[in-house]
Length: 169
Image (cartoon, rainbow, N blue to C red):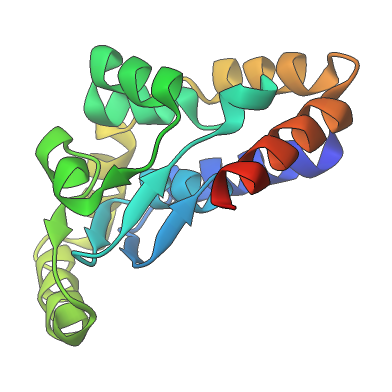
């Protein structure tokens, strides 16, 4: 339980950061990695990236509120109930990825985003980020604790892992 709480608290610090944070994702962006991607201000996916949030397969409520705030309730529910990987293109289409850019273009993009982030005075940026973020941190943490505290989490995770490994074979 404590491990998941610490992950959620880290994700909340990133999401509520007083400065913009950029995520650069390629390959398989899964589970807590996808939650980290969602928590960032600007999310860049390489065209080959695939995203997946399988937590509900083992009944874990990690990142659900932030995902819904980012892409909307219906798209979040579709993504979470299907628990399939989605392509970078689909992620861009639903607003999960801010940009689709190959790794070779990331340095230039980060430079551009850094310049954009500095256009406002520091205090204005901090206030803007605070006012435009979801205010559900306590609800998200409570939902995670309730889901992770339910007896049998380790067995549920192991069952999901075994099923996922069989699908890969």
